[in-house]
Every structure is written in structure tokens, then in C-alpha cells.
Image (cartoon, rainbow, N blue to C red; front, side, top):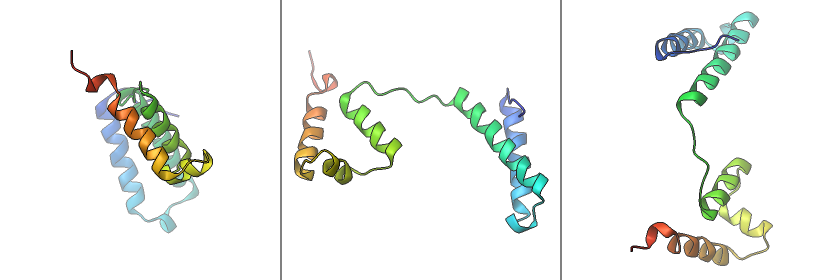
Length: 105
């Protein structure tokens, strides 16, 4: 897999992927399909170095991140925790309201 080290290389990679995908899925050879996958993985690795997601610092943020990772909604989380949706909403609200950012000195 090629390593991308600059925005210029990344833009060239995107152009190549666009050209290949413009052919249409049914018109691609097996080799071109493999190339798209390899280019996609290279782009993904480059983007990880550019766009870093910070870990959440609040309990609410941590819970929301886990919900996103597990692809579950708040209602599904409430069911898993054996809580009513209203009670879970209240817990989230209390987390937001008691956040240190909401207090002024």
C-alpha cells in the first residue's frame, strides 16, 4: 500500500479514484477494483494523520461516542440499561447542566 505524505498526493489519489469509479462498477476489472480498495485504504490512513478526533472528556461524551460506535440510538441504550427513555434523557440533561463549562467563577 502506498503511503500518502502530502495534500498534493492525496488530491491526485482522489482524482484517480474518481476516474476509476466514473467507469461504473460493472465496467471495472478485478485489478481496478483492487486498486480502488488500496487507494481507499491509503486515503484513510492519510486522513487519520490530518483529522484527529479527540477523545471525549465528559461522561456524556463518552456515552455518546460508544452509542455512535455501536450504532445505537438513545432509546435502544435506555432499553439495554433497563431505564425509561425519559429517565435516560434526564441523566443526559443533568450531565450537560452539571458540566464544568456551564459554571462561571
